[in-house]
Structures are given as structure tokens and as C-alpha cells.
Length: 421
Image 1: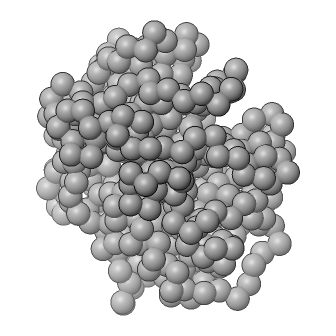
Image 2 (image 1 turned 120 degrees about the vertical axis):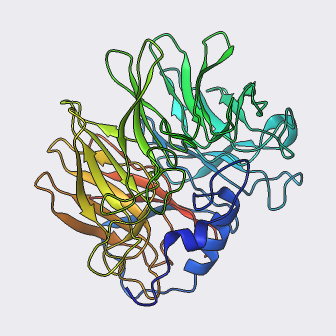
Image 3 (image 1 turned 90 degrees about the vertical axis):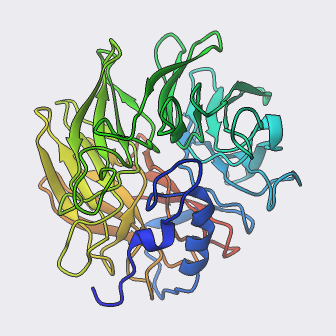
């Protein structure tokens, strides 16, 4: 599309060993600022702003819900600490009545800073997550990141401090998941034996083990998404780079992988950077038949946009099908968060750009029906939120919750929103 900037035009750069063209946290505020130049005229009645954050908060991650309707999440910046420019971030609760409670203000240093991945909440109400920066251990100038817990009583503790280099991972971008024994699992986007990221486990006793070191070759590299797990204990995830080197992707266009319960990594699909897209940043979704669903941030070659991204399915036999190629404006551009699925098999997700707002658009919430048809449920207007990066979550009534990194009542603050399809 003439005059259409690629997503990588906003997101390119290098930090902590992450490959050029892949999403980097320091570039996200730049994108948010660009988006605020757009304005829209209409707000759909199905969208509700549950909470608007103060300017500079940047809630990039998705949220989790409890049975009482309370919402939990993190902000990348903001908070009371002066140890980070703009604040080191917060962990918050939004009550069912719409009141925000800050459960923790990150302080940087040994406490960690700038959480990006979504939280995991256990049956006792304890919250677990990762911070992208912090601690100062190892080879990372601003710290290699942490795994933390905030108990239901509000006590914060650091469970693990990443050391980076060849001995440990660094820069965790992902959410965590847990098994029935209380062991936590996740990925780091950098560090490890090859500097291309890791899969790690934190045991219920607090000991960290690196389960796999990505090489950045055909096995993939730079995983930014969290893992999902099947009933047999196998994990599934994506890497934003690596895989089979092709065309524009000199280090590979990204992969979908399986990490088996006996410790073997297997690439289920290697993206080509053509109509199937490239750079899958978001976590996967797995249905009851073993099919995997996800998104790529780039390419897809739709009729008027070369870099708007895709929604894909990897069948249980490894066959890839591109379910949708985004068109930019007004369709959507740059799907970044993880998908959710309703009981009828319809998929829901977000794009950080596109939609009906002016300019590049302020982002969308979309649906891919079980028959493979896409429709826009909501186009953000910037005043009610813009740039939805994080994963979506669906409650028992079918309402969808998420965050926008910007927009809302305070323009640059971001929001928590609810969509009722």
C-alpha cells in the first residue's frame, strides 16, 4: 500500500542480542507517541474502558481475572520509584468496582523493573511474573531481569534473578505458566549458551534450571512469548527469529516449536516471510484436537498491505494454514497479543495499529470465525485506548478483557478495557 510504513519501521533495532527487526521494549513508547497523532469520531457501544492509567504508565501486558471480577496486571513504567526514568513499573489490581490498587511499585536494582509479560495467578491468589530489567547481576548493564511473586497478602519477593551471558537467560518478555506441582516455566528473549534465549523452569523450591538454549539457527531464537502445555507435559511456543534461513530473513523468520516432556526441542513450522508472515511474537493457543493458533507481526501480502501480519493455524500433523492476512486500514495492522477462543471455536485477538481511526489507526479487536471469516469487533479511537499489545482473556460470560498501552482519559496513560461481543 503506497505510503504504508511497515511495523518493523517502528520496531527495528538491537538490544540484549535481539535480532534487528524484532520487537524491542525501548521502541514501544515511540510507536505509542506516533499513534497519538490519530483521532477517531466514533466509539462502539460494546467497548467499556474499565480503567484509565496516569500518563506514562504503559500497560503492555495482558491481565488476569479472579472469580470475583477483580483484574490484575502490570505497567511497564510509572509508579513511585525514582530509580528509573518515568518510574520502574507497577503491579496493580482493578477491583470489580473499577478502583485501582497498586499492589507493588517496582524499584529497579535487585527488586526488578519494567514488567512486560502477563501475570500467572495460582489457586491461593498469589501472583507470579517476570521483569524485563533489574537486579544488575551478570552481564546486563541494567540487569538481566527477574522472576517475582506477590502473595495474596501483598508481600513481594524475587524468586530468581537472571544472570545472562552463557550460564543463564536474560530479558524475559513472556508470561509464566505452572504445572500441578507448582513448578514455573517460561522463556527469556536473550541469554543462554548462544545468546539467543532460553526455556527455563523455576522449581517449587525456588531453584532455576535452564531446560533449553536456543541457538538462533534452524531451532529458532529470541522467544518473546510464553509457553503453553498439553496434558502429556509437552510445551509449545514461538520464536520471533531463527528457523530456516530464507529470503529477507537471513537468520530465519521465526518458528513454532514443541519442547517435549523428555527434553527435546522440535520445530513444527518454520516461517518463510512470504504469505505465511514472519516474526511470531505472541503465545500460542491450542484446541482440544491439538491444533495450534497464533499470529505473526509482519508480512502476509494482503491486497493493500505488505507488512500487516497474519493469523495462522498449525494442524496437529504440522500443516500450516494462514487463516487471515491483515489489510491495514480499516482492517487492522500488527497483531501482537495472544489469541483467545470461545466455546464455538471463534478466535479473538488485537492489532496494535489499523482500524477506522485516522492515520495509521489506533488498533482493533478482531474475530476469526470457525469458518475462517474475519470481522472487526471494535476499532479503538485513541481517546478510549490505543495500541493494544497484550494478550486477551475471556471470562465465563464471554466478555473479553485486555489493555492498551496508550490512550484513555489521560491520553498517554493506557487503559484496561472490556469488549462484550
